[in-house]
Length: 314
Image 1 (cartoon, helix red, strand yellow):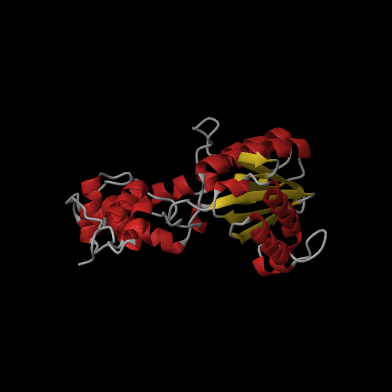
Image 2 (tube, rainbow, N blue to C red):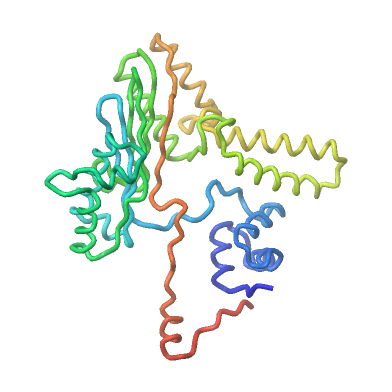
């Protein structure tokens, strides 16, 4: 059996909101497997559904850029939040976002792109690491575009214009008035920043995620003790609810919390006299999916002294 450390219990508690003893039991039941322990807690109704695996921990900035009918978003990570306030770092992220308008999601192409003023993006990044004195990395990029309509950007918790912790792009296809589309796009982008949909439509949700959720729903339904046919109906109901709550178009619009997003878009298209289609969107949140190692100063001192600090769980 794997050793269940206090650090593991603490992490599981932070990620699920479950009680300490429940977290300890979950880890014991799953031989220390963190993801399996999360599923175990959820099966027992002791943890809320997690939309993403892993906690948001890495620092840095998300940058957005829009030019005409094209928008790009990039994520550049750093070790600490102090670097995100550095003007040199901010300028770099801003320029890289503009370059991503051409390279799109291809990180290799973006890294090799010519940087304004000389050198490549990768070379300037290396120089920034040396001069700022902290490790940095170009993690990901994305691009959206429309043939006719508007691409709208939104940054939540902005550190500077076009830079912040969450960046959203919304691509609206329509022949309607562009100013009206931009107003609609801004509201939709704010909704996306807050609601964090996992896909545009329910059928677009990741197949592996759906299977994981189905497994959890099945275990919960079985615990009801009801007949197999009822259990199956319970599972299907749970999955329909999961798809509805995690697909953008079927989510309830955060502005009124009663109208589906797809209905909001349809109504606006009718008002403007031209159909409006939400063609695509992108949402980048700084550090999502990255685990940041937490240093334990006391343990480091103990280790240096040759007496490694133990981590018992009471």
